[in-house]
Image 1 (tube, rainbow, N blue to C red):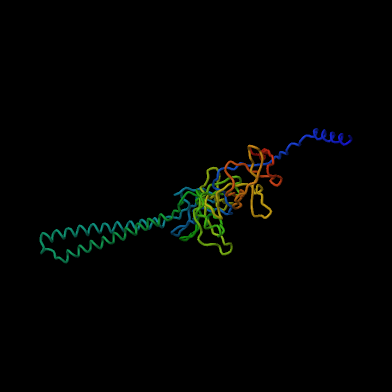
Image 2 (cartoon, rainbow, N blue to C red):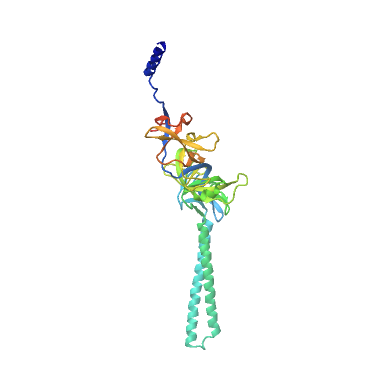
Length: 367
């Protein structure tokens, strides 16, 4: 009888105990977006002007005018410096005078030749044929003298024009080397001008990656002096010889000068290259946080936790891992667009675990 009572009590106790509800674990997750160009490793670099010129005079003389200073913006054709033109103006006048005298002598000689030729035709015995040839030769010699003096006048005019130093393009003055009233020599540097309408950025690319640079389909640059801004760039030139010390190749990017900011030559920053070509250097895929990856005990297989949005449970799936970029890990296969994967807390999950998606935190200062 006693055993029967104990059994009844145990059964009653079992009837009163309720089954515990399943644990629903909050997780952070992200939805995979469509495959697109991925951002690759960053490359440090420094900018320089596309055109950078040390301007000099082609003649020597005393500097009498230099209306520009360091930092001034100049327009193409604007006067930057001028030499004393007096001696050159005198040379032009002398060349012009010599030419005019020779032209007058030529006109007289041509008229004289025509007169003698007319007489010889009307009365061949009145003038000898040798005199006719002599008059013709005199006219021809004066024609050659006129051509020579015309060249001398053109040279003198050019020399006078060389006393003015004009801006070859729109740019900015970054250095001046002489002051007014100094005597300067021909080809002596007077002013340095940079074309700032475009800038180049030179980056160093490791030799293991240089072969993939031609497949780059886009690039952006960021600069330490202009934080939180990205500037579009394109590959302009790929160096053909590696540095002996660093084993890197110089790659030149071209950046258009933006309207809202000024990118000055010499700015340091980083360039990011984009590509859709497969290979060690690049790859198309989904970029996910490295914390979303799970590796088995042998470190041979990599998984992610997939969220089944119908049942709100999770399960593991093997993925093909690409290379690590500055944006995250590239996943080349094993997942599909639109799927949700867990990005944090993966070590606490198990197959069939009930989950709920935690709200995404927004950094302070963002809208």
